[in-house]
Amino acid sequence: MSKLAIETRGLTRRFGDLVAVRQLDLTIPAGTIYGFLGPNGSGKSTCLRMLTGLLLPSDGQVKVLGLTVPEQAEALRRRVGYMTQRFSLYEDLTVHENLTFVARVQGLSRRQSRERINELLKNYDLQTLSGQLAGSLSGGQRQRLALAAAIVHRPDLLFLDEPTSAVDPENRRNFWEKLFDLCDAGTSIVVSTHYMDEAERCHGLAILDQGIKRADGSPEQLMNDLGASVVEVLADGLRELKRELLTLREVRSAAQLGLRLRVLVDGRIVQPEHWLRQQLPGRLNGAELTLVRPSLEDVFVSCTGERL
Image (tube, rainbow, N blue to C red; front, side):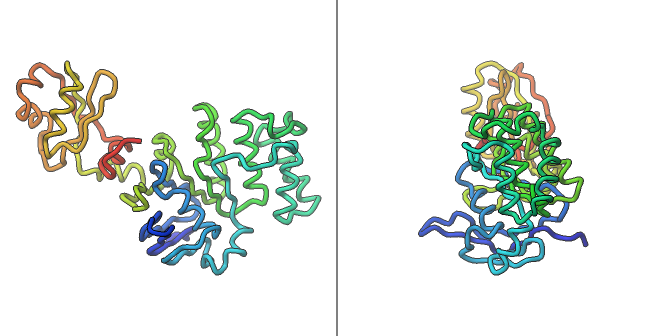
């Protein structure tokens, strides 16, 4: 059996009457990238804070890197890195000064700090920015600096809380290439996101909704196990057609994508295109219906009833 980076049973967190995370069971293998997918308020950040020992669970059991949390949280902190959603380094310090400060906080000697910082400046394209104030960096540059700071002590496990929410698609792609490099080198990674393309890059994934885990597995597995068929409909009057489709009990959702409707039909319907034409013969007469492969967003809609 592969070594586990994280294992939880019944993990729960309450804030007064609000249950932010409810009875969460996780089994995350080491050496993988695991994602939490969900909208704002779904419990993603609360989960990460409990897994790092920054927030006490109300109930449940947590083991991270073989350590029991929160009892061994102090020992765990030396072995994990944490990158927050908002840029949390010192804007009035230079890139080099920020990395030096974090390295000393993490207990690196002067020699270790110097060697590690030079390595990170090179690997994360920060050499020419070394003397620049962090507050003057662009979004992509800040992101690279924040990641470098989070791994300055070579953590075994890296937590990332919506790390690409403030950068453009190109910087997001480059950022994920760095994550795969880290994973290949042996770092386990847990990332929260509300981007479908990022979720599809993860080895494993939990879909969270109102603090509840609605689905768990690899993106491919979740799409294959959807339990629904996806039909794209090219027709006139899509807005009215959508309203009529949503009155059908077997239709889980219908969303307009450009000139088409993407319709999720219960998997018990054997021939969903033919069935749809039977339900709305007048409306779908002459329409083009195509059975297509489910996407991760279809899985999310099926689990939660809403779109990201």
